[in-house]
Image 1 (cartoon, rainbow, N blue to C red):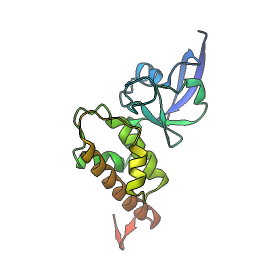
Image 2: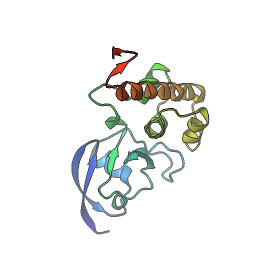
Image 3: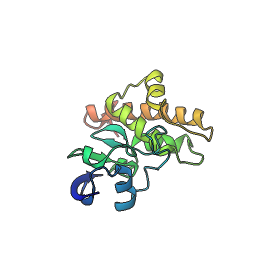
Image 4: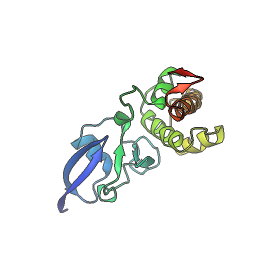
Length: 173
């Protein structure tokens, strides 16, 4: 394997990484950048635990070579929260207590964050489609679905506030 240097942007920060072109993105995120949100699950891109956002789209980092990223922005679970606090999806998962072991949650949150960024008015069918390739063995499926529904509500409310300049029903939020 011949190592080369890659310039990547993760959670808004630039990083210079030296590795082989076929190194899976998850190895760089976890081992080089010490980001623990994405989890190594199956290593085959089937369970979803390793999901990250690449230019706003959910991507399985265990099967994505670093060379495929190019200049696209990577966002991990750690990068979702911003100056305004938790991302609406993160807040919804907390509010619904949608965790048991927590291993799958990274992928679930990333999938729903990608969904609500595309469709603030996502339907139940959209939610189920976004989550259908994510595996959870703990049995918190009902809580995860409730959190996803709440995340859509929060994201819709946030979109309404942003659209009217921070005013909602004439009151500053």
